[in-house]
Image (cartoon, rainbow, N blue to C red; front, side, top):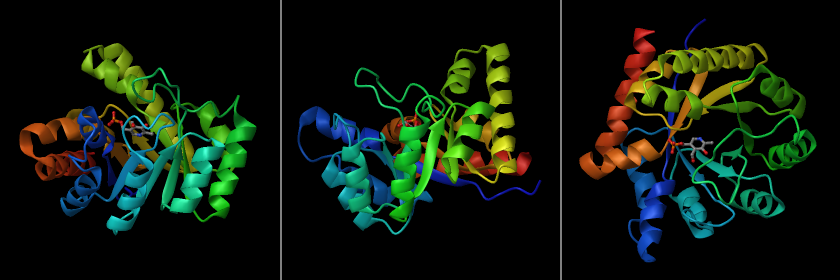
Length: 250
Ligand code: PXP
């Protein structure tokens, strides 16, 4: 198939994590969003968690107003978050599962068991003009559920693959990557736009960029970590380069 353009969404949550460690106002996630866009990011992703451990309500508002490119509002499908998203009017909302005890989003949304709740949230966001994506495990059953829910976009959770890759477990990494490839092809077949993210670095971004049906990667922790050493603009540019190389070499 023809390759779709591959967008980079930069997740700036952990700029807020560093800010909150001291309780002041720096580093400012909104400044990071502006710099990431200037360096070539196609959009900004931020997760307003129920416990506000990193991004806060005012950050979402400020980022939404400051950037000319899409804001992807990651959120749990709760009444509180639905109200905030509908008020903030981001370009997109990505529904994710949320547990207070987790360090990061550990698994995909339970779109089979939680079908009706996710469907209701999806419809409310869609009626407010917000494009909805569901953060799911790379499984065909999850994509079938996304079709039935009426979600126009899915984001495949790449965490299990990224972890197996980092551990040097080639068998598990190959198996996880095959699941991602199959899920991306199946999503495309079902006319659902396919995104991917979680735990990606330069190497894994280069590899996954070769999957033609994937239209967007959302990457946070690694880019913000690299920014400590290189600066945010250079980290974003390097990631863009890795993605371009992966797409071109496919
Ligand atoms: N996509 C989603 C839906 C996420 O929840 C996260 C983590 O907040 C990411 C992408 C980015 O993951 P990472 O920070 O590991 O790059």
